[in-house]
Amino acid sequence: MANFVLDSYAVLALLTDDVGADQVADLLSQSEHIFWMSVVNLGEVYYIVSRAQSQEDAESVVSDILHQDNVTIVDATWDRVRTAAQFKAHGRLSYADAFACAVASEYDAEVVTGDPEFSGVEGITVHWLPSKGKPPSTD
Image (tube, rainbow, N blue to C red; front, side, top):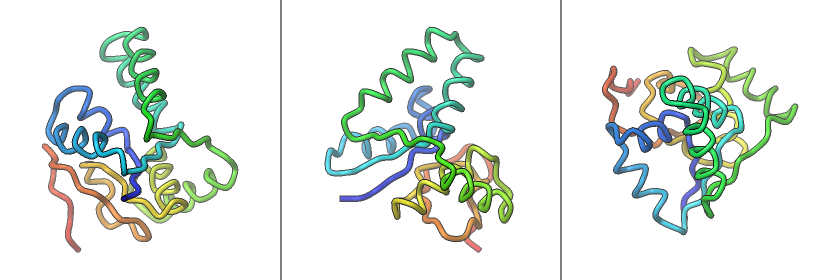
């Protein structure tokens, strides 16, 4: 059993059958894995799908995620907001990405992403997906 946090990058890769989609699908298909996703990252997926496609498509995507048996959406409690703010203050990552880090640190889980912003973030482990952008730093 492994614990994972879904970053919006991973979900969007899966939705668009982009680079790394097969790895995300494989991880999700293994029922022994447990997944968490911050409601902030889910909101990021929602606005990206809504902007690129439609609000109806975004609603459908969110519904699909909410009905996954092994995915739990976690709220932005004050403790998580504070932890995310600390990650944001010490790293070069978006505020939404900082929420993925906060959830990962809380649940001792690996963040599933290909987003190079996660390179060098201390205190979390990343399950790297292939990326079309700059490869992750190994520093």
